[in-house]
Amino acid sequence: MTLRKFAGLGALLSLVMPSLAMAADEVAAPVLNSGDTAWMLTSTALVLFMTIPGLALFYGGMVRSKNILSVMMQCFAITGLISILWVIYGYSIAFDTTGMEQGVVNFNSFFGGMGKAFLAGVTPSSLTGPAALFPEAVFITFQMTFAIITPALIVGAFAERMKFSAMLIFMGIWFTLVYAPIAHMVWSGNGGLMWDWGVLDFAGGTVVHINAGVAGLICCLVLGKRKGFPTTPMAPHNLGYTLMGAAMLWVGWFGFNAGSAAAANGTAGMAMLVTQIATAAAALGWMFAEWVTHGKPSALGIASGVVAGLVAVTPAAGTVGPMGALVIGLAAGVVCFFCATTLKRKLGYDDSLDAFGVHGIGGILGAILTGVFAAPALGGFGTVTDIGAQVWIQLKGVGFTVIYTAIITYIILKVLDAVMGLRVTEEEEAVGIDLALHNERGYNL
Image (cartoon, rainbow, N blue to C red; front, side, top):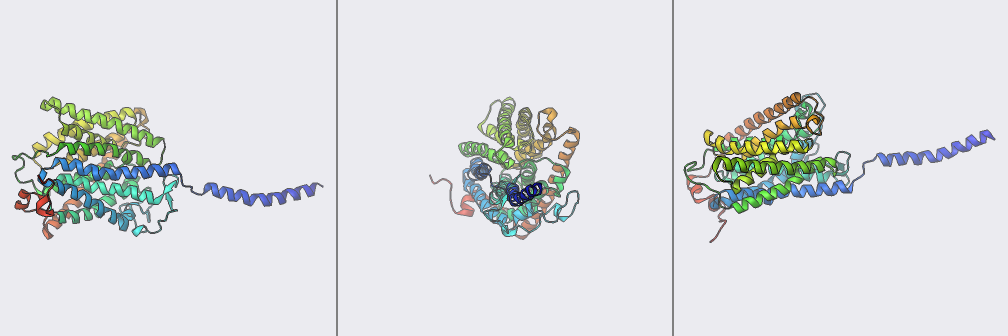
């Protein structure tokens, strides 16, 4: 009787165990999370909104009326160009992990493989994310919007003087040799050069802002000053556009920073909060610094302060706490104000719309302060236990990015200048790029 009971139990288990194994497999298999997917779709749209129309209006309002269309045209053309290059090979260079090994420095520490070229293997059912919770197609598009806005930011440094044809070729090459590799080194995971160093860059302080700011500085130095700068008045022609653009950047940046959590979770919520705090603090910091220095606060100043705060908190958004964000924002507003005004005047370079003064300086400041305020001892949510050691790592990341970007950008520009020329003619610059290169006017009055 006892043997029969055990035999019956064995038979029962033989029937049940396959079902249990199948259930375990179903639990282990990645399952799409509709909440994460919805948030990432929303964030993607918000980041694209930052470039068109946000950046187009922000920059467009700051140039002279004869050049407004050229700046907006450049933002739109870059959006189209980088989207296609991202699909063909950019995503693969940035995020393909073939040949990468943690702690081993090789070619794939700098450049991803080509296993994802032309988006090979991407289907509606392929998932990604911290726990494979949303479609890879959404991640590809989200990261594409970062790749779009980074070269578009550079436009502010050489506005009103670069040929449209030269701009397109420069951006394509720069994206290939600078943006995609830096993104790979910082964000691709174990085996990426700066990832292995331990560089903290939650949403692009290094990849986007230092990268674009330094490239912008090299561009304005190689191209030279606008005709008449700095003696001829070159005041913004429509600050209403600039304020609207800044507002769009502020709103869109929640997708930029909170979306970089890659999930609808507590990290995304805190990233949203600290982004708002730092931006508000920077706007006031710039405004009061200008008020004390020049006697009056300006609309252009507060708009610039907004962007400085957004830039500085970007690398820290996933690890800094509210009070750390407040300090980062105030520091960014004041430091970027003096760099975009006093420093530029003293050094004499013509960074037309302060791409380096805001994005370069703000990105560097934010990256360094991330190493400080990510520490739990100072209210952060990172794993930093030795602030000095983490600041040194951040400095290494900043230094590498500055040197790499400056050298490669300079080489690209000098080669293009020798082959096709970079600048419009003096006559075209005097007439305005809108009419000279596009046969259009922003205003027909």
